[in-house]
Length: 413
Image (tube, rainbow, N blue to C red; front, side, top):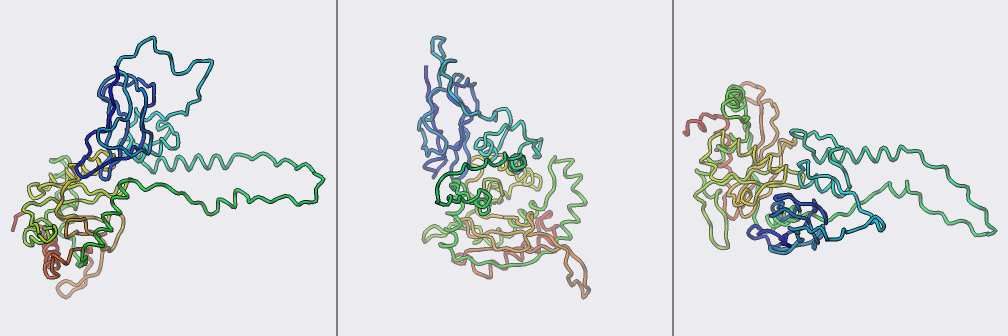
């Protein structure tokens, strides 16, 4: 009996997907819920699993194919008969490309793709990620080491050319060393990267985007965090970071200036009575913005726990569409990469985005005295069609006030 392996229902507004890679090949014994194939959409990577136990039969769609919901990818033979002739006999061997054994080791989609394309064995690579997981950097370093070993191998001595009775000078071919001085590589853009490019260009073309800046003294937040982070982690089993303070401060500012929590739909303005905050996360696949739904209902521990969970899922490529859906305001933190100042781009259809940056000790004046304080520059990009400059500036000042006096956030005053 044969059953179809089909493309699952795709997320809303997603019309098709790209088949990234098969993890099984024709003739493999499949157990129920085995991971068969990865499909990449504009938003997430979908894992197609086996619905029954059997043997993988004909594969209709190969790597790189564009597929739609309900389309048949392969056949799964659920009852294998002993009379079925083998695909190949010892007299007529068929050369097969060795397939890396990726099923026993959890790999993110980007790592899995590198392993598949370069025919690597993940077990032979030392992982430096969490719990020994392989990262993209681990695979790239392994490939670099292989290239180094190959280049160090002695080359055979050149064979002396046989003299010929000809007056024509031998044609000189360019050496391989010279041709490798300026290497190029053309690769197709991933679905996620193409979608990010489309949305960023849309933001540039369809919004009157401006950016306002301010600076915040992080001393009180740092002192409060240092005082309670040990007890916080012991009680809630999650670290106390800075992002929860910024989420709470942003919610307070959004409540005071509802236009910044709104969006434009044609000639209408939609004022959102809820606070779904997107937290930008950088992954090997590109920038992803999971959403903290009803963030105003979360306490500090709930915010930190949700952000940590989203970070792990994003790096593993297991974010679901519901994790990315919606969002009324976005926070992005370029400071983790060392950014001092930037102008973040809007995440349509949202009308504002807050940019955090690196914390640096600077000389500032307090009460007529020059003192050293940990300072962070903040940037708020906004759509001037909906948000006036006065509102944008006061919104950023509100965040600054909440962070410099964090008791406001704790006491709700």
